[in-house]
Length: 222
Image 1 (cartoon, one colour):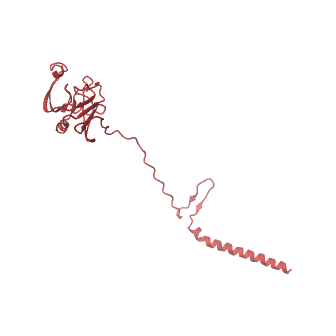
Image 2: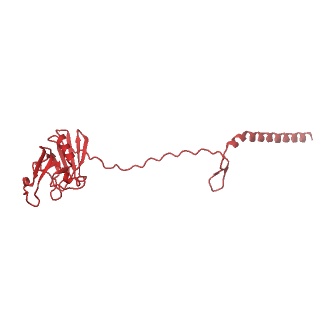
Image 3: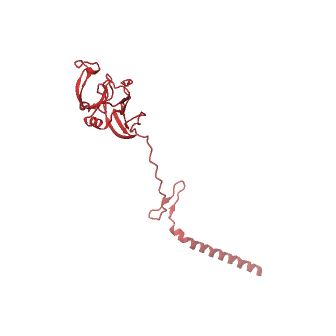
C-alpha cells in the first residue's frame, strides 16, 4: 500500500515538473514570437503578410547586364601602303568620303564626290603631285574637245594633282550638294572650298591617296 502511494506521488511530481518546464519554454519563446511577422498561410498560395506588421526586408535584385550590340561602323582601317610623307588617304565610293591619316592617326574625314559611272574614277593608289592655287580644267587635255557635249573648261581653286592623266582633288563648290551622297565629277575628287584649301595647305607632294570601290576599273599608275 505504501508503494502505491509513493508511485502516485512520483507521477504527480513528474506531471508538475513537466508543466513547469513547458511554461518556462513558452515564456522564453515570447520575445521571438513578438518580433516575428504574423503570416497567414493558405494551402496552395504564397504567404500573405498582414498590413502594418514588421516584415523581413526583401533581397535587392542584382542589376541585369546591359544588352550588348554589334559595333557600329566607324573609321575605316588605314590602307596598307608605303608613305614617305607620313600621310595616307583613303577615298571610298561606298561612303563618299576621304579619310586622312598622319603617322597612323586619323586627322580628318571629309565628304567627297568622285566620277560618275560615265566618267568613273579608277581604283588604285595615287600620289599627290603639283599644287595649284587656281587653274582652268580643260577636257581637251585628255582628248575631249571643249565645244563637244562632254567637253568643259572650268575654273577651279585649290587643285592638287593625283595623276598625269588629269585627275585632281580640288575645290568644287558647285557639287557640295552631292559631296558625301553621290558622284558628279568627270573623274576628279570634288571637295568643298574649305576642304580643298586644307588639302592644298597641309598635304605634301608624294602622299598616297587610295581610291576604293568605284566602277572605274584599275588605275594604271600614270
